[in-house]
Length: 398
Figure (cartoon, rainbow, N blue to C red):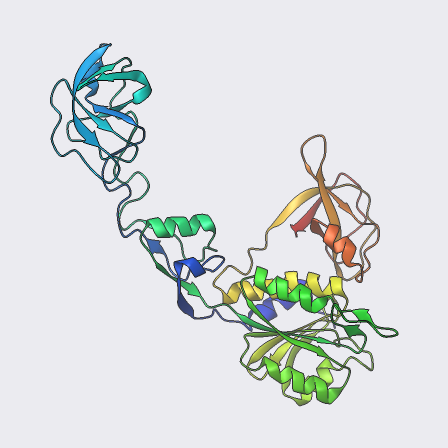
């Protein structure tokens, strides 16, 4: 009996736990997932500062213009003017400079003329104009970054401004990748008769990095039980083993039989989905294993649907956050059979500004070029009836 996609995902996720946190340098934290909230260690700006170059003045003194004021000193960024302004006084100020006591606005320098210690102001300003108040950006103790955030350059800029040189993040999952089959060779090698170039290891290495993991290539195991068993031992200590190929019912599909002798406990095998029916989930020793189909499109589609949520769970993210969207179907589709379909499709917009999904006419699971051109996977439930163009469909963006 084949499992539904939903039940298979539930059983896979039940086999994973959140990894422990580790502390990394701010400069090594890009793309990592925060393991705890980040609170500001200081207030920014620490005091009222000027947003422009000009003069700090009392708004009451420039209510009538032109107004002439006496310049007492200056307040540059990194410095200050420490006296309190009185009636008729001004302080030359620069962007980022602390606003002196008594001043309540900034007049930009374009609206003034200075001669000696006298400045003429030609435009009135209201109280607060061009002043960044203390704590405008954030205040000490304020949460700036939440646990579970995938850190971007913008996030790290904020963490730095909040004075955090180190961040606590979830450990990267170590993912062992083992391709199988006599018919495949590595990119750059010359394929022999009846052989093809393997793309699955390359795809999965990049996929794991995209998901925040650390890939470990175990190479290509030939269709030989002893070789497969030996190479699979390289997954010891990994947080996940991904195999490709060898999961179907042919005489050369050895993954279940060979690794079964090595202690592989299979939770399930075969899913009611297309592409990707022959998918295995189990545990090899202490290492969870997902046995992906060998066809390259099936490999990546199953990785998106099942492996990505598992990696998200390990790194403290919501494993169910794979966002589904609605789009308008661009062409008719026939009724579906008992398997849930994930159709490769391209996205455009129609004249109403709606998202338009156009499935490729051919969905062969060996055609990587169409997967590369696809913008999304269009989901069709098992036994879905025929559907006409212009109806709404559900998609997952790639």
